Length: 504
Image (cartoon, rainbow, N blue to C red; front, top):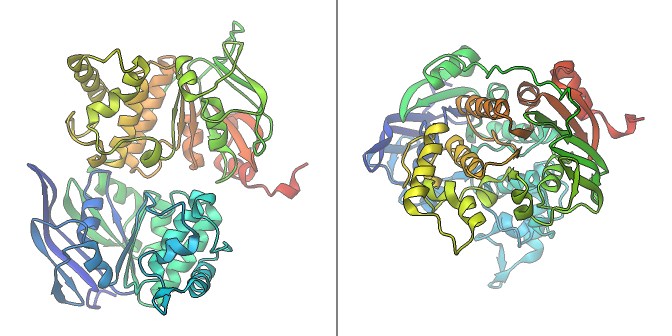
C-alpha cells in the first residue's frame, strides 16, 4: 500500500481564522482502496482539513493533488466533480422530501426534459438495497429515524461517481447491527478502489475498520501511522499530548437515610409507544440510562422535562404531583433538558458564545426584563472560566467552536438557570476522549454539589462510569434499574440487547 501513488495528497496546508492558526503546515495523503482515519481532539483541525479537502474552504497556503496532478478546488462542486463526496455528522438532508428525492437531489434522472420519477425510485431502491436498507424510496425522509437518515446520506454519496468518500462521525446515530452493515459497505467500496476518510471518536471502530491513522493536535500534524503498529494507549497520548485522562473520582452516592422524597419521580409514565415507566432520582444522584437505539431513552428524557406530554401516569417533584405542560413549565420547576441534537435543538451557531450561554436565562426573564449587557457578559465569562470553554472568546460565534466546547456552552446555558435536575441526552456524542473525560468530570462535580442528573449515553461503559444507578431500557420498556456497582459491561450488554422473544 505504501508504494501506491496517493489518490489524494495535501501538503503544506495552512488555514488562519484571524490571528488563530487552525492548520499549520499540515500534510495528509489518501491511497486508493484504503480507510484512513483522521484523529485528534475536538479543535485539533480535523474539520478544517476536511473542509479544505472537500472544497468548502480555501486554504491560505498549501497544495492539493489528485492522482499526482495539482488541482485547486474553488468550491464543493469542484470537489464533487473530482469524485470527493462528504457525509457529515450533522445530517444535511431535506426531511420534507422523499427518500429518493434526497438521494438524487440536484442530479435527478430526466426523460424528455422532465424528472423520471420511476427511474429515480428504482435507482434509489438499488442503492438502499446495497446498504442493507429496506426503506420505501417514496416515503418521507423525516418519518424515519436519525440512523436511517444517516444511511440515506451515505446512499446519496454513493450514487455519485465517488472516488473519495469522507465519513465524518458516520456511526454516531447507528446501533451495533447498523454499524456492522455500514462497515460491510465500506469494505466493498475498498474493493472497488474507493478511498475513505473515516472520522470517529469510537476507538474500537477506528481499529476495526481503518488501515492507516493520521493524528492532528492543535492544528499541527503529529504523524501518520499504520493502524496495526499503533497501540491505542499511544494513539490517545498522541492526540492529547499527554496520558489518558483519569475519570473523576467522587464519593459513592448513598440513598437518603432519613427517608427524604426523591427530587424527581415518574410513576407509570408512558405514551402510546413508551410503556408505563417508573423512575426516581435522588438529590445529588446521577442516574445513567442505557439502551440500544430506539429503546426509549430519548422518549423518557422528553417526558421527564415537558418536551412531550405523557398520556398516562404522573410526575412528582419532591413528592407533589406536577403536570409539565411545556419545557418552560419544567424549567420553572428546576428541570433542564439538553437534547442529543446539538444542531437543531441546541447551539445557535450564528450567535456568540456569550449570547448562547445567556439565551435561556433571558428567555426566562422575558422580553421586558432585559439582562443588563455588563451582567450578561460577566455571567457568560464566569461559566466560560468554570467549564474551561476554549477559546475563551465571548464574542466568537458558537458554531466555530469544536463539538466538545459547544457541548460545554450548552451545559453552561442550562447551569445559568440554577436547575435542580439536569437531563443530559448523549452529552458526549461526537467529542474526543479528552473532552469526554472533561464532561464526565463536570457531571461528577455537579452531583457532589447536590445537582441531580439523568445521564443518557449509547456507550455502556460511560453509563456505568458516570451513573450511580443505571436504568435499562429495551424495546420502549424499562427493564430494570440497578446499582452501577452491581453491573458489568457484559451483563449490561446482555440486558439491553436480549431479544424480545426471550423475555418472560
